[in-house]
Length: 227
Image 1 (cartoon, rainbow, N blue to C red):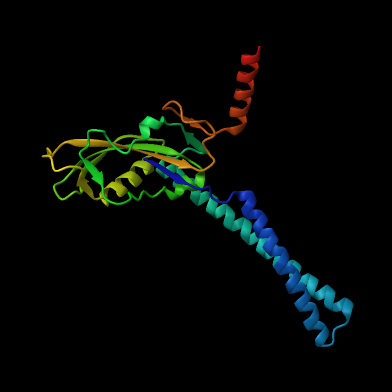
Image 2: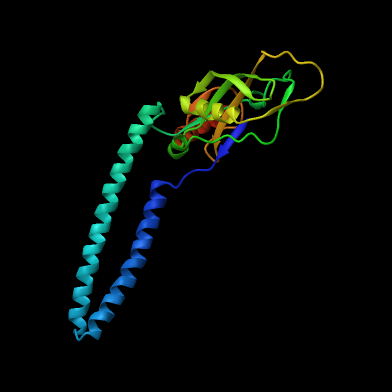
């Protein structure tokens, strides 16, 4: 099963939006203050100077406050990343199409309704893809039980998301044939971020997402083929 998520806003995009909104606020506030001061009898030059000084003080306060808040959030994000064992930079996972099957072909159960898997919020924010393979049994009432991890990369947060989804899933028998309870089944969960995996599905290894390095490698391979 492939779980897809979209990228979050980049730091540059967020900063551009912040300064764009700040520019609009500065223009509106400057015009409003200048008009108000003129209405109470201030001269044109004095009103412009006073409103400009007030707006400048507000801009400095907002910019410094935004920088402080960004540093605090970055520190909290780094602490959370280290606590959950996530890599320091974006990573992509490459997975064979056959490895992403929903479950064993011999599995006599089917999932009733969609299997809702939550993409780990911290991994999504950091641009980290991952994979988890869960092994579980199915009880007589169709609930998954004895869920444990067979393999997860690069962090346990991906298995925690897979386990949460299986714990809320309901299974139904595909046929009326007798089934042996106590049998275990495996299900892979591949977590992808849209636009992050630039390599086509081939191989079952996971790799760091480094677009510049990948572009150089592709160029070298192309030169070798034409040599």
